[in-house]
Image 1 (tube, rainbow, N blue to C red):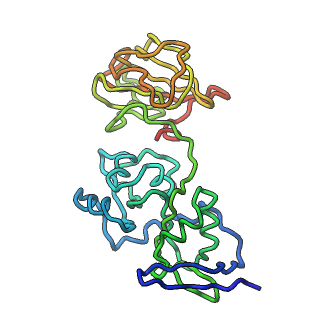
Image 2: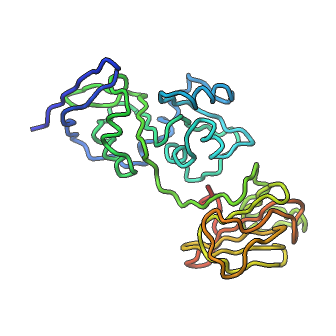
Image 3: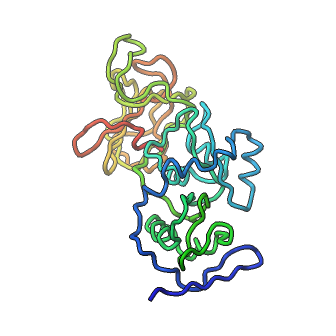
Length: 306
């Protein structure tokens, strides 16, 4: 026999669930299916948000506000998240961004709370949704306490379900992505990973990493904790630092100054050098590479960089 649902509508407008949730006849859905492109674009009528004043209102609101945002040319994930009062890893999780490097004019869901936001497609049993997000760090009691259930849920055939388009806040939940700390504050990537026309040699060749534009002398920090395996001059790299981490090895080239020595054990975000233009370079920037330790194969930094 299914457990009964006891629902109390409080005067504050929040639905408290004091009984057991009705069991669902269906199995728990896969997490990836919860955030389809259709679900993420349910709020088209709300318009795009780019106005800093609107961002400030959202950032300072005590209520959950969910909107769409169109990425501008000078924005990256953490910058967008900060503008709205949250953190990049939460926005990355909600938008299911395997690639954390944003593209100009890319549309994404933004909001002003720490955790993930689930936008319902309609008819989804609350019990299933909660179980799914518990696997991502959400806690049932917090989910139940922090959402206005009288606004986003309804009872259908004895089961508590989300209304279509309902926005459910899941405090603390986040997906796990391979993440490396961004080694330098940068406004743009001047050259990406893959084949390109070399800016100096003027012929097509493979580019092993990212070139991150930053002012001369800007701090360069370790993307992850590890051991310095090289620190010195390395041909076209100019002044270069190499750090071996648990699963990857990273390289930092064209440095104006090196702040570490071979054998040093460094922590994530440790200062290892300064942006420069040494070696084969056309101006101040950081050349950043990622290699997989298991086979030494070059990796696209987009898969790791945060």
